Image 1 (cartoon, helix red, strand yellow):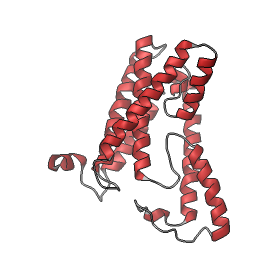
Image 2 (cartoon, rainbow, N blue to C red):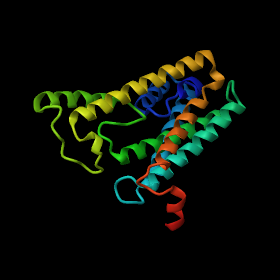
Image 3 (tube, rainbow, N blue to C red):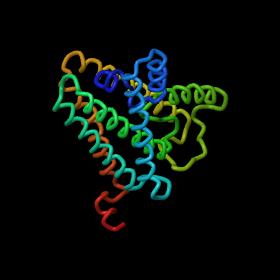
Image 4 (cartoon, rainbow, N blue to C red):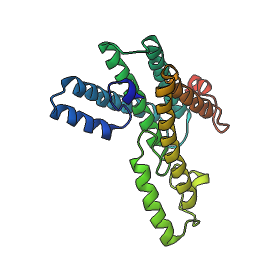
Length: 225
């Protein structure tokens, strides 16, 4: 979405964004380089914010993870409101504000997912997931896919075997690509509805994390903290 709406800037994929920054500088395109710099700054700020929230507790799932998702949800909601207010071409100040907000939200998400330490899964870029799938396949061919892996913290009982981990990684890969297809289709068919897609998805994530039976509601935890 940031590529379509924010001047061909990536606000989640800092590898691609760094390449875009380098190309813009090399071609003398000052405006484009400033857009990429804003995305880098926003992502780094988001990573700091995410880390400051989730590093407040012991390793593993806690209500701080829910709090991190909640903060990201509010930022995405604000971004969606801005895009609905200016559905066409964003003015310069609004464009930079949107780049920063989108990048901050993705930085928070990256820090949160990294903290959860789900084997081979990162939701803001896919290169590491592809690499992990390849390495896992070779390891499985040599040692067996069904062999139980020693649990590493945090433990994910459903991912104790290499086969299950590869299965999850492949699902993430196809979900990533499928969402990009949906984004492109919405941009072409009904661009006004496009901002609703990330908002709906993050709200669904928020509902899932809040409803986890093993943990109290975030408000109750915050009240007792």
